[in-house]
View 1 (cartoon, rainbow, N blue to C red):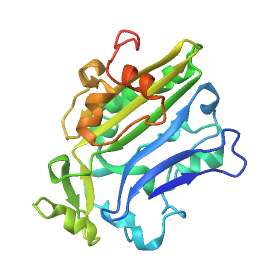
View 2: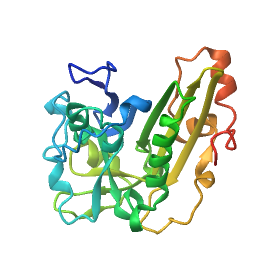
View 3: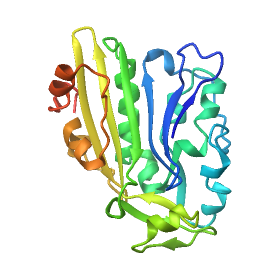
View 4: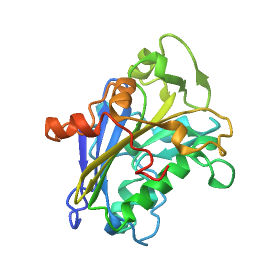
Length: 253
């Protein structure tokens, strides 16, 4: 199910879109646009809530109950800091459909130096650049196979690791924890398009000294890892060209 979030008076039209797997009761990706106008100073709504657009039958019953004592944080996919142009837009980033369980070391790290945090800051830097027309962003965690799922969270904070973790998620018994988090970027410039992907392992270790280029890859490679067809609305000839290469120097990595 794809959920489209708008604020009603949104100057940009759509705030963001989410693909929700109703069987696994988990977020697959969040897609949104960035540019200098998206980053303001509206403030933080700061209160997690269930997504009103998600039917009750597809929800995790009482999402907050899975986090108590679990050791995992509620990790935004679309960052709260990326939606500061209005209070309403920021509020919608706190829906449980726009988050995944993340270790604090991944979601923040010592003094907010984890690769995931630094990548999110880079995205805002690229969005603000004078030459940027639009930056298209797709972010999420891997949930499609047991091999790319780290574990399941039970209510009350206990963990489940086993071969039937997906079945337990379908029964609503566990909340899936991705083994990898990814970002796919498509930058629209006057002279054309540029694309790059990132995939970061989700663990409880300190990776603050790792350079972001270590996680960079082509969109083609990221598609192979995730099974997701990113930026499929591009004309085929442009898609084939920009998704096959990284051009890390052009991204300043």
